[in-house]
Image (cartoon, rainbow, N blue to C red):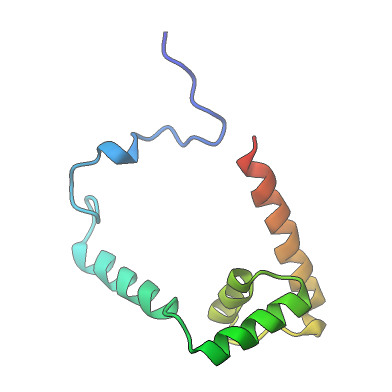
Length: 102
C-alpha cells in the first residue's frame, strides 16, 4: 500500500530524479530572463550599503533578507511608521517557522 504524502507535500514527482532542462516544458527564454533578473536583484551590494541595511533591519526587528526583500518589492526603505507592514512580516515569519515543524 502506498504511503500518503506529508501534509506539506504537493504530490509532485521528486525533483532529484528530473533529467530534463532546468526550465522544464516552458519557454527557455522566459526562464533565463527571470533568472538574470533574480541574480541582478539579489546581487551583493557594497559593504557600506549592506551594513546600513543590516542596522536598519535590526532596529525594526527584521532580518537582513526580510528588509532587503521589502526594498525590492516596495522600492523604498521601511521606517518606524510602517509598523503595520513590519508586524505583518513578523507574523509571516512565525507562520513559516511553524510550518517547517509540522
